Each structure stands twice: as structure tokens, then as C-alpha cells.
Image (cartoon, rainbow, N blue to C red; front, side, top):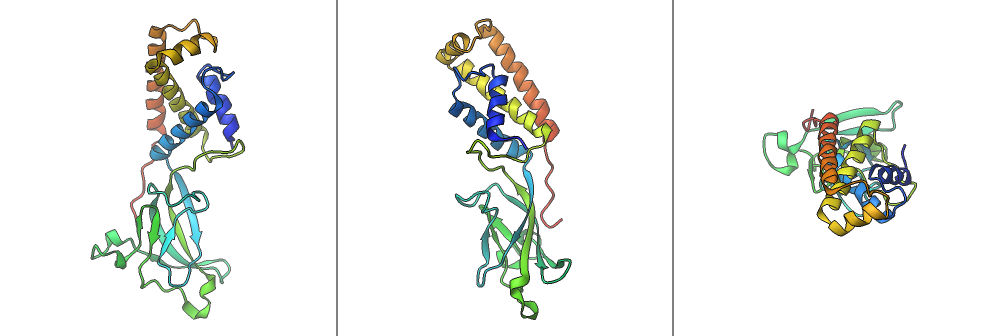
Length: 228
């Protein structure tokens, strides 16, 4: 997997500033994380999470390990099941249906996700045969990617998604150069791009935007419907 520091290095090359003379390391980090959020909205990460039930608790933060700062509203859940880990191999007991697909719109008839928090109905039984400690909730769904912070942080992007991320970073960088004349002048002189005129910059931006549109269409993920 590509590390955060390697992504920043690649993006710095893409925007013709490998020496960080114009876009400092923090700027490139912002470009990468902005692109990661955009890619995550188009092609989110598929996840499977096992949640250990807690007595008298009907609500659980999803992907709490990946998002320690708190629940993430963009998380989407497709399926929730109850599993028994005391059996070898583990045995699925039953599927909990989504509340939106039941006979009533009450949240108590099935599972529901609100602002990244999974709620399960009170009728879900997790204490069969007196070994409730062996039961878990298994959740499948789609999630945005966590923000990259440390140099060694990695993100599970395929090659196609990584190239799309880099394409988006290039668009963002060129848009900043077009909008900020002082930044463009600095990029021309300090970063060795004196051969790039404003007209050439605009042409480069149009090409970059078309590249991003093409790549974003290729990686777009059609979500499964809840309960499928």
C-alpha cells in the first residue's frame, strides 16, 4: 500500500513542484486529503465490521477505530447480521432487516444508521443458550477513507483510485494557481516553470479536469440497497 509520504511526493511531481518551493508539504497534504474525501464520495471503501454487543446498549458507533474523533455521517450500511462465534466455523444466526424496509417507519422494527451510529431494535436477542459473550453483530457497508496524518499512514486504494486521487490533486493545484496570481508567479519562478504562460496554465487546467472526469467515472461505485 502507498504511504502518505509517498503520495505527497508523487503529487508534488504531478504539480511540477517536486522541491516544495511553492506548495509546501502542508499544502500538498491538504491536496491529498481533499482528493481522498472526493474519491471516497464516489468510490467509498467497502467494509465488514464485527461489533461486540454491550448489555443494555442499542447504539454503536461504526468504524470507531478508523474514526476515533467520532461517528462519520457518510457511512452507509447494507446488511446487519447476528453471529455466534462459539461454533466452529462461526455460525450466522439471522439477519436484521433495515427499518426503512419494514411494515412501519418506526426505528424499532429494524436497524437504522443515523450520523454514523448504528441502532438496533430491542427485539434483537443476543443471549441464546446462556453464552451471550460469544455473540456479535456483523455489519457490511460503505465508508469514506480516514484522513491521512502521519507519513507512514496508508489507505487501501486500488491503482485506479490512486491515479484518480492524483488527478484530482492536480486539478485543485491548478485551480489555485489560476485564482491566485501571486502564487502563480511564485510557481513560475521558484519552481522552475517560467515556460508556462497564463494561457498555457488554463489549457493545462482544462486537460486536468477532463482527466479527472474520465477517471472519476471509471471508479464510481454503485451502492447496494440496504437489506440486499
